[in-house]
Picture 1 (cartoon, rainbow, N blue to C red):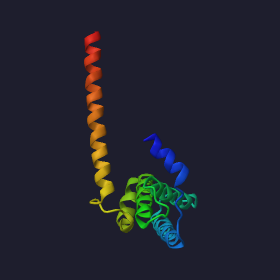
Picture 2: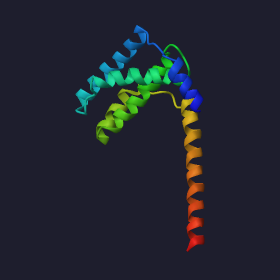
Picture 3: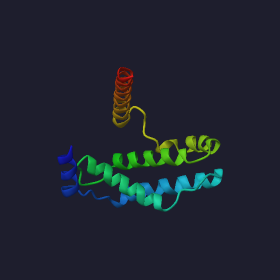
Picture 4: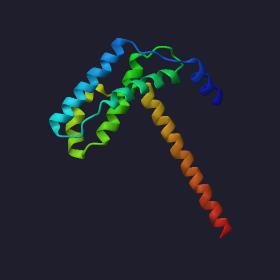
Length: 140
């Protein structure tokens, strides 16, 4: 894993095209407009830069030299989840259907991978907890 990360840092520097930047700009304009009309916390301009960096980081993880649409979609989905969680519950419920077009479909590969990794982490945490309880019981 260390070698993979070192290689990606040294040799992979993904670039974004103007078309990709336009997609991010459209997302930013839509989310800003919807949050303003619903009375929620507005998204800031620095979030645009964050989206670009997340897209480039996602492409870098896959060792690509160019940012693809799926990299941008992943970054937008992550930003949208974070943004909705920062809103009051009633506002988030109103905004969520309006911004649904930017969400990744639940059947995609990343969601499956996230589910598998989350399940494995939960299983290992339960094993670790059980092991610690056994050790504590033996010492007492």
